[in-house]
Length: 115
Image (cartoon, rainbow, N blue to C red):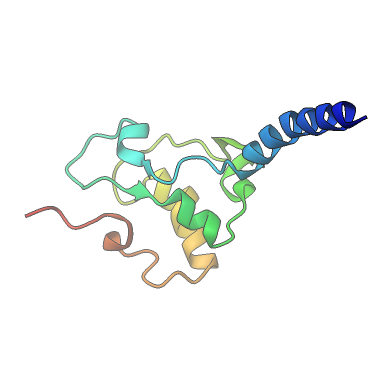
């Protein structure tokens, strides 16, 4: 009987641990948008604080098509300039909605250039 209970326990662990691990996977902690989207230009890269947004309670479906992440809700076609798709479709609308202090200021997301 002990062997059966032990075997059942081990089997249960093999089934539940992967499920718990996948539920805890919120993607990368940070995302270098300049590198990910092959953006050229002089402005410093925005390193999107993915984990910070999760910690603040931003749901995956706020940005992604699926609750599990993956493709974005919007297409990022215009990648440079003041009216780029990150500003217009992703970051600014959410920052305004969430009342992010200085949410549309360049230095909120673009770190000052290294001196």
